[in-house]
Image (cartoon, rainbow, N blue to C red):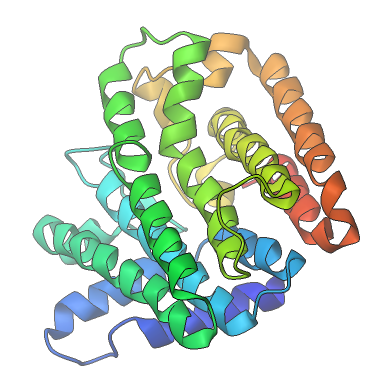
Length: 292
C-alpha cells in the first residue's frame, strides 16, 4: 500500500501542470491541493481492483489519478466558507486559507477536467476504447448530481436534522460511496471488465457497496472520537453544525457494530474472486479499522 501510494503521488505530480507554468499561481495552488497528503484510498482501490483482474499498472495510474483529482477538487470546494467553512485539511491550512476563496474555486474547477484527461489517457496503455468511454461515463455519473455533488446538496439541506437512517444512507451512498464505487469500477475497467453479468463484476459491486457505506460510518465515528491532530482536519464539526450522522441516529456502539458488519460483507463479496482479491479485503480492513 505504501508503494502504491508513492506510485500514485508520482503519477499525480506528472499529470498536474508543472511548477512555474503559466498561470503559475493557479498551478501552484492545484499542486498544493492534491500533492503531499491524504490516505489515497481511492487510488488504492483502483489498483487493487485492477490488479485482481490483471490490468496493467500504467493504465491503473491513469484511473487512479482521475479519481484522486475528483476527490481533491471536492475537498477544496467542501472546505470553502460557503460550504463547510473549514481551515484544516490533511494536517495543514485548507487551499482557500492559503490562496484565497476565488482561486480555490478555480482550483476545483480546473481539477475536474484534468481528471477526465487522466482517465482518457488509459487508452494509450492498452485499454480498449469502449472500456475507456465506459470509465469516463462512470466517473462523470459518480461525481455529478446523481452521485457526489447530489449527495453534498442533500447534506446541505440536512443541517439541523430531519433525516432518518434510510435517507442518511441514500445521502452517503451518493456523497461518499459513489466515488469509492467508481474507483473499484475504474480499476475493473482498466482490465476490460465493465458493467454486466460477469460474476466478477457482480462481486466487485457488492464489495464496493459495502466499503462505500462503511467509509462514511467510520468517518462519523471518528468525528466524535478523533482529534484534529490525528484526523488532519477539524474534529467535532458534524455535531457543531447539527448534522445527522450514523452516531447521532444510531448511537456510538451500534454505529461501530454496523461498520463491523459492513466489513464482513465486503470480505464475503470477494470470495468468488479468490486470492487475487486479497488487497481489496485488506483495504476493507483499512477503511473500517483506521483511526484517522
